[in-house]
Length: 260
Image (cartoon, rainbow, N blue to C red; front, side, top):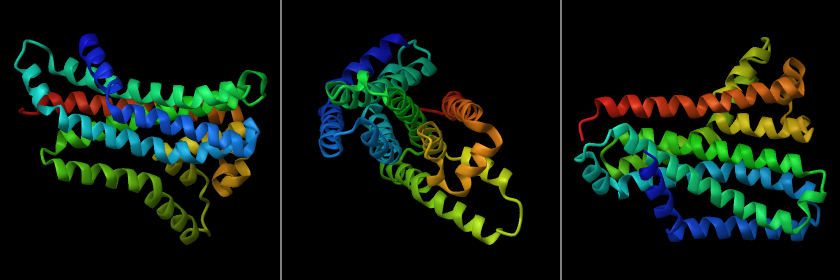
């Protein structure tokens, strides 16, 4: 699996899209810091961008790499190599290359603007950790979709729909549910519904750390009330880990049954 991982990682790092992704975050970091001239404010602004953009990029890269490397993957499957090791190596290679672009692209400008001397270093570190989790989660989800659909166009369509649902539609349904059932106790419902969406969960995790959970309104108040900052963060982090584990488990299960 390590050789497949290294091949996928270096293959993607040589791709021009990886450079575009890296340069985009690099320019974004410098522009935000130039406009705000304050590391703490730049971290808050950056949160809204990473929460939405990172899942989208992870989804597109995951599906695109699966379909574009299908012939090479079929060649590998003809060799005496465990198919689980092939796909896990590819999955880890994609996720790590995207995470490296994110870390370097944002890390360089913030370090240049004196991140290590700022009190926002822990908030910025948490932001990068959450962004890395979102990379691993959405690459795994996109691989699940690609493995389930042979048609490339359908695969891309389902993957984008999945991102759109979790990034936009889910919030709308959640808010409508709160309004419709306003007369009933909704504390547990809010907590559970938030955990079922990794994007919302990541947003709450960062907002709790930034101590601006009031921006979340009802959901943020409930989260802080029941779990407090440390417990809420621990629970959120454990749930994000499960969001990585379950899609990866399903990939392995799908591989055992799939006829290539």
